[in-house]
Image 1: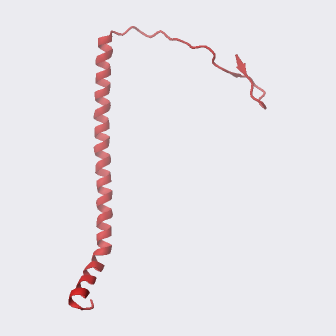
Image 2: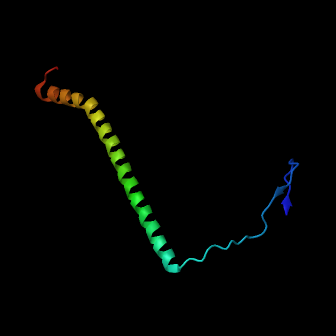
Length: 89
């Protein structure tokens, strides 16, 4: 079966039947072992990627905190000294 789209001069083929492919026969026990092994490998990879992402985020957050402390700490110290000692720095 082919369908036409308005404004297209060519016919576009449309799949109308389900095609079933026969694969090799695999022992269910082997399939289960394979499933378990693939799942374990995927989980190890996911854990490794999460640890790496966590380290990256920790590094970014630590830098932000240090940058903010560097900017704001002198003002905090100056305000506290002025308030308690009445001295200009």
